[in-house]
Length: 319
Ligand code: DGY
Image 1 (cartoon, helix red, strand yellow):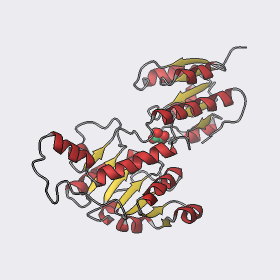
Image 2 (tube, protein in one colour):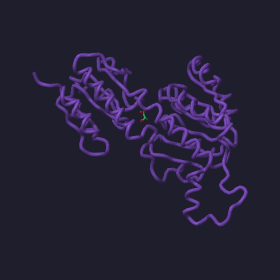
Image 3 (cartoon, rainbow, N blue to C red):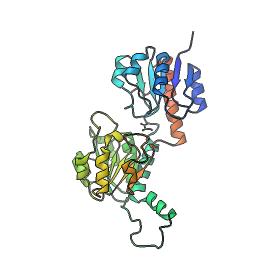
Image 4 (cartoon, rainbow, N blue to C red):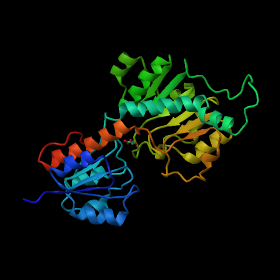
């Protein structure tokens, strides 16, 4: 009996590919850049399973051509790159990688919060450029982290993991979510509030929502205008959740104090993007889950989902 065919759109650890090869013929796009659309479409036509990244668009066009396809395993917890409804209609299983990246992403979110609030990147550049002439009372002064109010928008697993870190800094943690999370409230001492109240009262506003039709452009001119002039805005979700032009204006006109951004509407963000010209923006190249251990765990979970489905079993982490 011939083995099913799996196409992988990026190289991952050899042992993970080897595990997949026990159940499938595997072909891997050999370059460390997104596979060209035409190649992906051609490979999808022959594939029983796809191992994809958030840089690959799995839409109706692809799904219509992929007649044999049984599973799309996304190596990410977010799956806004996949038309899940179309996949479901065609009987194609979609899986993602929850849990395994929670702590690494929460670490990064908290690091970004501290780096932005305490101006670490700007201070480092200042020193290297020879600007440090003397100690001075307000030299590179930032916003306090310890004891400040953190507002988390999108209280899922990562939000809870950030809240745990924030408690170590004696922060007052508010959250806004589609549904209140009573267990998190009891165990972490976080408090649910409406979005506008969270925006008005938080010193740090951290966006962690997935990108859906409801959250696209969630933070725009109106929401930014509610924030304190000393507020730090942080986005570790998807760039599409924020109106970047409105954010640029709010930062430029100092209506909010700073922003830390791990994600952008267009990725990679063009280096001449207006947001990157601002000293009060800390910008990162979407590295929320980027530790060696976590990325291996994500790749392994995506592969395990493929192995399960192609062996006739239930997926481990279906969307
Ligand atoms: C995800 O998993 O959705 C992140 O954005 C990448 O880790």
